[in-house]
Length: 258
Image 1 (tube, rainbow, N blue to C red):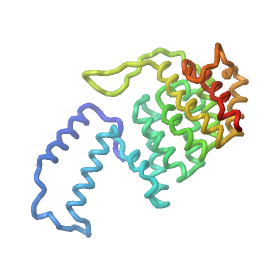
Image 2 (spheres, rainbow, N blue to C red; image 1 turned 90 degrees about the vertical axis):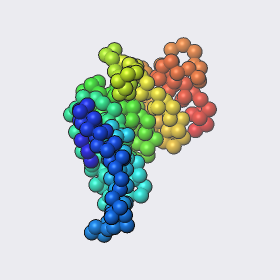
Image 3 (cartoon, one colour; image 1 turned 180 degrees about the vertical axis):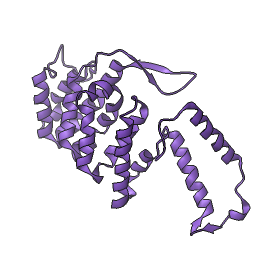
């Protein structure tokens, strides 16, 4: 696993070394050669793949490994899950950044390695004060993986629904979309938090079909907070409010057919 608190100079050094590597010819005497049973050409290709992945993933390797969890054996999955959780723990000591979302996804993808440890860690994201401090940045990844969370950690998934849809982000502090130095898009915390709610709404019909008791509990808990009250006409295509959209979903044919 590589460092993720990179400086611009660090990025420049990697880019320079990578370009030098691409331009250099592979030593002829190493073609077909093996050292300690390792083919040198394959070793070169493997290292190049790691560097390329590191560059593409913002300095993180474990997230790419986690995405291939289906081919990992039990020991490999355990180690990958541990690395993903340690990475997320570290990133949560740093200012909010896109790398945190990659790490959250990796932790969910490797949840089967240790369900208890995964739930204990991810639960921090939906509780105060972390929800208020970092939710606008971190929770989009959890919400986008709500179906997997509902299957693996239904209690956490239920609490995520309630925490997200009952919270109102009031900060309009600017946030940056992407890392471009020439053309950079700017959003704000309130817009980012509201946008992060939509995967929960989008996947709610599936939750109703596969986890009906949990879905009803979510609606009951939200009703206590007043978040399921429909303001204005119910229109199934109206996504002006995540709370209204969730209520609309429950009134659709998917819900009535249960």
